[in-house]
Length: 133
Image 1: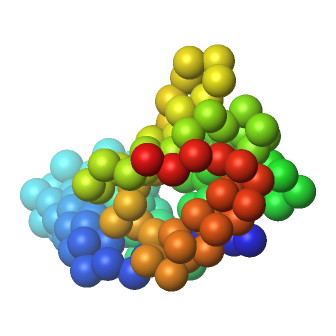
Image 2: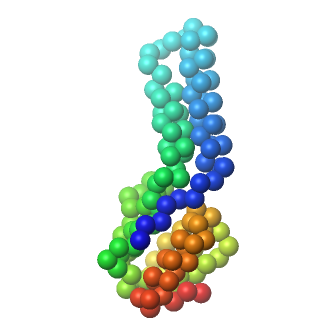
Image 3: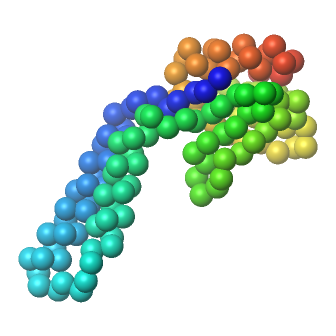
């Protein structure tokens, strides 16, 4: 089971912001005559903009072979959690909190997951005796 990120207008707005930053960077370098070389920051702004435009196509959570994989963790690699390590799942407004037996918790963004995908994930986890609060 694979859950992709929901397409939200916020992603497009953030992408437009990064493209505007890149345009301003390029414009200011060439019109204010302080050309110092290749515009690396403009390229990084363009890459950020493209990544936010493609956000809806990215996988957020995968459940396969009794392993839950969380993708798109900020500044971290993907996290693999065995389903038997999950003690409970708590849904609190915009967050889905996974409580593990070792005391650690992991947060998922509820607004990034479609309702039907969350329902299917819940069914799969409850079938493997994970408690939902």
